[in-house]
Length: 285
Figure 1 (spheres, rainbow, N blue to C red):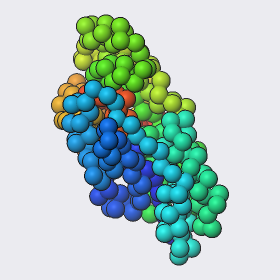
Figure 2 (figure 1 turned 180 degrees about the vertical axis):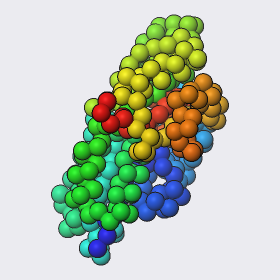
Figure 3 (figure 1 turned 45 degrees about the horizontal axis):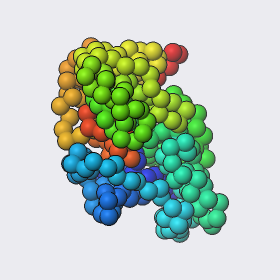
């Protein structure tokens, strides 16, 4: 009997990487007007931002249904294998509740964890779950470990534009206009399963410095645990600038910095130009 890991595409892990990890990704659907796409299957991250930049109205994403979870649980558990499901934070989507409903009705042995994360933070939990599974831990042990560790994950990001927060109704048009004129870069964090504004900086270099200040305030990075940088948009130019500006933080600590791109779930709210990092805070901090 083995342990199967299930998640949704809000983790921004590609289907190819998921197969390499031995993880099942259930894709979220996204609609631009009358056209519907499947995240990471019929629409790539780059393709999503190409469409997002060209459209005036924000696209709509749909939560994964309990039926979709049930079908996957049935398939993966038919040989008696245990299943761990790691969906997007319960405070960001009804997908979590649908997974819980499907698990409660399933004959299979399914444990659903409220990850309190999304995007690159959820990616770290999935990497960790896969590593623990490969080390021979059972589903109950993995779940307990993840529950213990998840609040030690920090996701901090710098936004390049306020335009998409305005389109989503999260800030006023006047605030977005003023922010654009003054080159204001908001710093956000996933905290308690929700997105929170940590502060603002004026200009990209100040923004990068502010990002690193927030990393330090969180307790610094535990480089013995998984970490990952992320970016949104058509290229990683702003992320590479951040890496160059932050050389002292990472040099000699890791052989290679893992990098991922943001998909539709968070991309629809932040737009292109996000630079972010997910990490475990250093022990004892």
